[in-house]
Figure 1 (cartoon, one colour):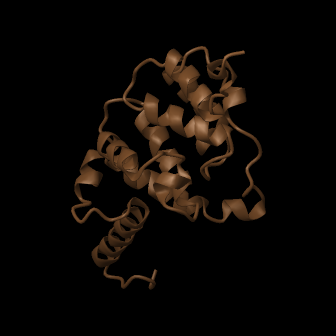
Figure 2 (tube, rainbow, N blue to C red):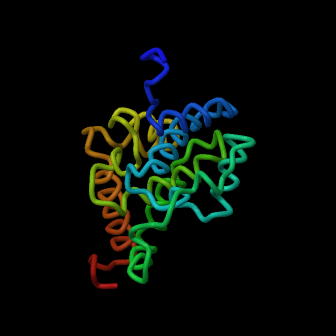
Length: 186
């Protein structure tokens, strides 16, 4: 057998290629295909289904990759699953709301992307790594495409996770000032 025939392809690349072959070509297809392929092969830090509820993940797959089997792409058990995994649910929801308020409005996948990015923020590494993306530049492009007005506020090129939490903190202070409260008084 020739050496070229014996070379095994990276499993993540095989999954990615299969998803892209089914892709509708929507703006988020490449990023979602990369995150799904990474999650399916044990990389990144996203939960099964990347973060959205199972029904939303099935919709995401149907919208971006018709004919792909969502059940086999959701990934295995969540290593962080357990009673403590819901302790940060409010935090996740605040992050989703922040991003959805700034969505481009071009595609329904922007809402799913907000849910996935928020799920990635719950992990401890750089956000692009937690999402299973190969480089920070891909995360920056994803943020600009999906949440352009929010991304435009990142004028100092802060790391994205830190930037998102800073935006939440500033929003909390603004609400407190509006209500005449100091942060922490409520």
